[in-house]
Image (cartoon, rainbow, N blue to C red; front, side, top):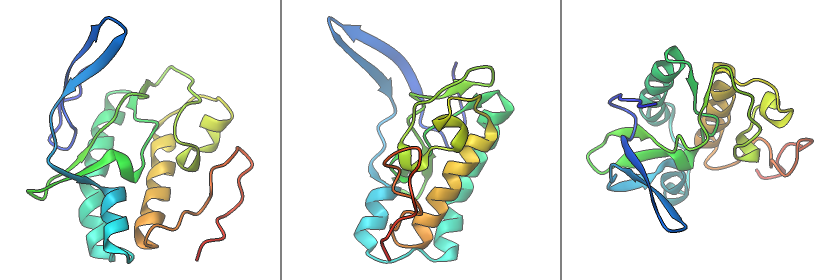
Length: 156
C-alpha cells in the first residue's frame, strides 16, 4: 500500500537481488530525532517538541484514516531534514487494521503489541507518548522495555 503524504518518507519499491532484499525510498539528508536529542544533551523545549511532533501527528492521522498503523513509532523513525522538514519513516512493520502484530521496539510497544492483540491508532499514540516523554526529558525513557513486565527507568 502506498502512503503519499508530505510528512511521510516515500517508498518506491521493494527489490531483491539474490538473497539481498532492499527498499528503494527517498534519501533524507539530516538526522533522526534520536540523534538530535543525543546531540542537544538537554531536553527539548515544549515549542521544539510541538514543532517536531506536529508533522508526525499529521502523518499518523492520514495513515490511520487509511486503516494503516505504523507500529514502531520512536525517535529513530522520525527524520529531521536539513531544510527543516520532519518526516515519518520506516513503515516496515506497519499493519492494516485487521491484523494482529507483536513486533516493534520493546521500549515503545503498547500493551496490546506485547500481548499480541489487535493494533490500532491507540498503538501508535502510545508510542508517540513515549517519544514525547523522551523528547521533553532529554532522552530519559519512561520504561526500559527489556520485557513485557518492564519497570520504569532508573535514569534521572
